[in-house]
Image (cartoon, rainbow, N blue to C red; front, side, top):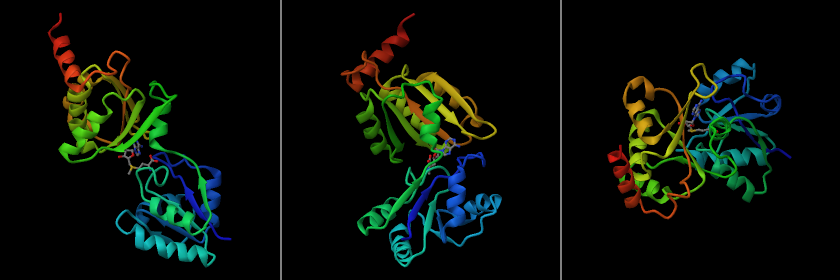
Length: 248
Ligand code: SAM
């Protein structure tokens, strides 16, 4: 019977897609994409001409049920997003959930994911990590979220928009202290790919020193709280940070 394939696409470098993904995209009847124009570039590069179907955050629920009907009627569908793995800070959750409930087969076709790509070359502990996705945009919720993570001992991985990088690192300095180790992975797999490894305080200075430093796409990784910081309140960390500044 027809299936829903969840197909990972490149993060930037057009070569980062698997042979199997290309085969599946060539075989399916319909390709559901977040932005059909954006995905059109990838599909035409690989000479895949298939009907596309727009499925984004705002219409996922209604459009998803249309897709499920199509699959039940025998059409196989591939879901792709603008970059990387669908559902990972991208649309698709409701669709996959409803397919599972409706007994429709869902087949993952793995590939790139910015979080895993960043972690694999960051040099931070990778045995345990938590994927945090995008932080809340609103000030209060953002502060609360970071405060709740301040004693987390696993490596934390965040997605962040270039517009909010500076503000987010500012919050991290205030809440987790200026010594907390950060790794910023910028423009992964692209021409200007770079990794920056600095304590939060210095990362903030570096980002603030030039508007070019906050251009591009970013994965922000935060080292877990050290044993020394574990159990310390946010207030205690702030005090420690202030004291350290005063020391010679
Ligand atoms: N589904 C994607 C995945 O598998 O990683 C993530 C989609 S999410 C809407 C987009 C965010 O992923 C960006 O804001 C950025 O934080 C991160 N990202 C995507 N591509 C990236 C790249 N080439 N370099 C750095 N970060 C990237």
